[in-house]
Picture 1 (cartoon, rainbow, N blue to C red):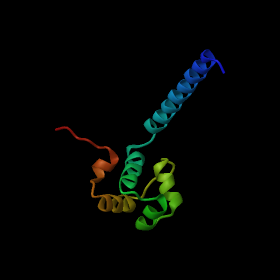
Picture 2 (picture 1 turned 90 degrees about the vertical axis):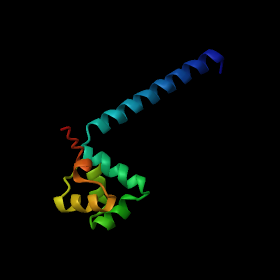
Picture 3 (picture 1 turned 135 degrees about the horizontal axis):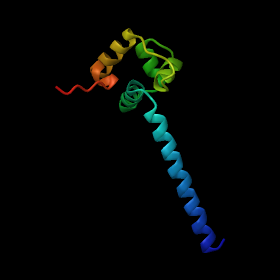
Picture 4 (picture 1 turned 180 degrees about the horizontal axis):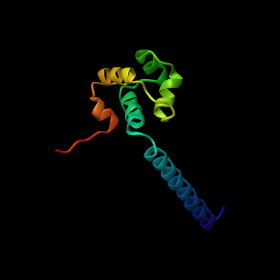
Length: 99
C-alpha cells in the first residue's frame, strides 16, 4: 500500500471514530441525569450491574434498563441508591438549585 492510500485510510478511520464519539455523546445527552449518574456511581465502585441489582434487590435487567433510561426507578429504589452511594436524591436527579 502506498503512502497516499495509507493516509487516506487513516483519515477515514479518524472520521469514523469522531462520528462514533458524536453518537455516544448524543445518546448520553438524551439520557436522564439519573440514568447517567447511576452508571457513573456503579462504575466508580467497580460494581457490575448484577452486583448492584443484588444490593438493590432488583434484577440485572432492571439496572440495565435504569441506565438506558428505559425503566423508571421506584422512589424506594432511589432512596436505597442514594443511601448506598452516599449521595442526595437532588444530586442523583441533577437538581442543582441556585439561591
